[in-house]
Length: 187
Image (cartoon, rainbow, N blue to C red; front, side, top):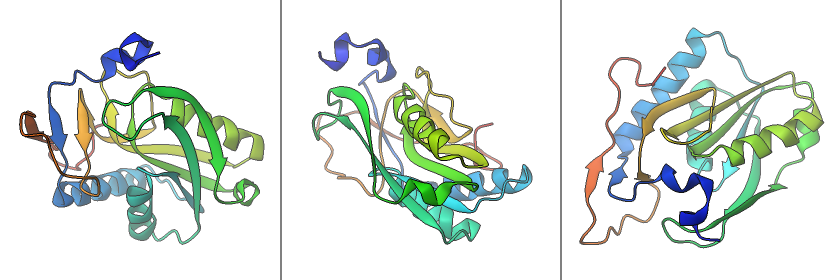
């Protein structure tokens, strides 16, 4: 089944590539950190979702001063290109999930669309028994069904992150990610 035939086909309009710069990435991380601090969140462990969530997870781990770090891989994309077809999430732990028992865990990914990835990780974590789980993404898709606890920005089309391949097709329409003012985080 192609992406066009799935229920989540409306997540990406495929008309614009939003480009997130390194300075905007830093603003997003700082904004998320400020919001977590303001809400009194403290974490014992940061769990990065491979691959896209690893860079923001490491950055948040450093800024928050949380040295304990775990990695989980969730395979969904059947291809490596933009707009690749999706499959049901397959969760693979790169760290021992039992290490998260009775801990406050910050789960980090780059983007949340339909929510399948975050839902799959949260379901796996629930079997382990952390005391608290907070899900954070840099970008939440406006038309997605995902409801992460926090998102730095909300968009309606594909995002190219600064650590990704920046070779953009010549005919692509691009825009900078519109960053929120103030705390740098969409509430």
